[in-house]
Amino acid sequence: MADASFSKNDDGVEAAGSRNPRLGPAGSDVFDGITGTWPSGAALALWVFVGLFAYLFIGNIASTFLLALNDVGFQDILSGQQDIFAENGNAFLGGNAIGLALGLGGVALLASALDSSRPLSYLRLKTCNTADGALSLVALICLLPAVFALDLLNEQIPLPDVLLRLEEQQMELIEWFIGDGGNFALNMLFVVATPALFEEVFFRGYVQRRAEQGLGVVGGIILTGVIFGVFHLRLTQVLPLVLLGCYLAYVTWRTGSLWIPIVLHFLNNGLALSLSKWGPESIADPEIVPWSLVVGSTLAFAVCILLIHRRNEKDHR
Image (cartoon, rainbow, N blue to C red; front, side, top):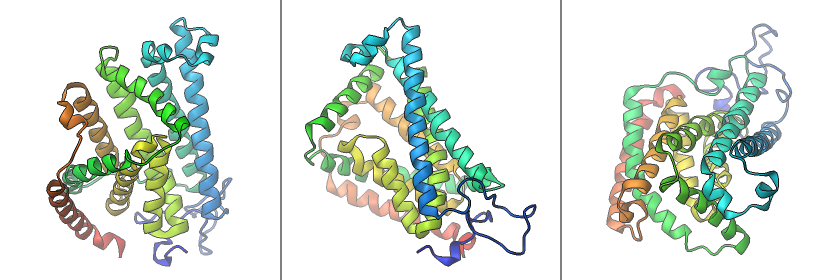
């Protein structure tokens, strides 16, 4: 059950589905909309499904169109040959970016507009504090050794062959865009900037709001992190992705601004792309992470979280 103290959001936007009998239709912060009177869990499940379906549908249509512009026949696309992925990476990445923007981003904006008369505030798209942003970035850097260690642990978990084949197909595309076939500027747009903006708007914006209303703050942060990790369909990396997702969800809630996780997401993806392309393999894909580094950096991360927590504590009393 959600904590009653969070019936109103940290920025004053009334929770979707809540009602204030003293406000008439013109004064309410909440529209009835399609899901305004639904239980939070049902509305969340609906919009997550709609968002993911729209992302996949629009992304596939866009990729098919871009492949057709590259003179790739429809039968060749259906065959799913590996060389098509390797030779037409920009078409797949571009289609995926369009799916993220129109699918996830568009659905998040639509759902927020239906649930609140202040959709941008509902999504926490408001100005951020520079000090909070700097502390959040330092905390992310301190968290990376634990992320790398969890990644190595995750790789030891056995997976079915069908999932391993799916990841091999993904790796084919990844190797293409970090190799000679990819254009770095386009990759920064398709792989770094677009996911950073629209994944955050959908997951830490709308999904987290709805999850918080049904499960409380802690439950909302954890559920958002889990959905974010599973969304990427890379089960060999699901644990570090869930950890990163939970951290970004915490920062979103505690600072009250979605722009901080958007910037952190951008910097994390940009660093990963840059290290994969130009960095030493031992850094880009470490085979071992010293436990002393993991423990020390985790303690530093905890200090950063404590500072962020105390800086914004008055906003959540």
